[in-house]
Image (cartoon, rainbow, N blue to C red; front, side, top):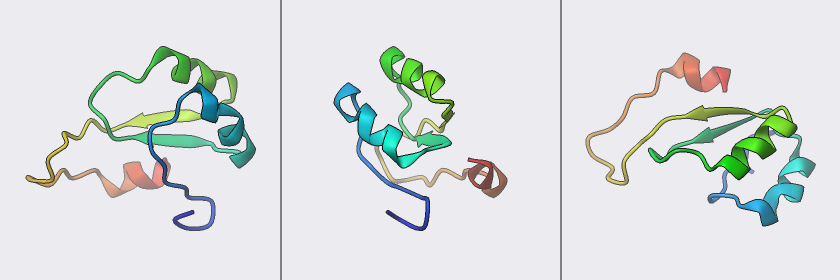
Length: 74
């Protein structure tokens, strides 16, 4: 847990879905540029979890600015 109600993880697959349900998530921030997998999208839809995707390439430079309001909304 990063902060109260804020979690950080690696990329989930179907084996992780029951654990994710137990967290009561309302949103997921996905930082990869690739399309979100269909099975994961279906899981989010079935559990009323909103996806926010910010496709950031693997390099750390140059920095990518994500608007603060967008992050707060997520």
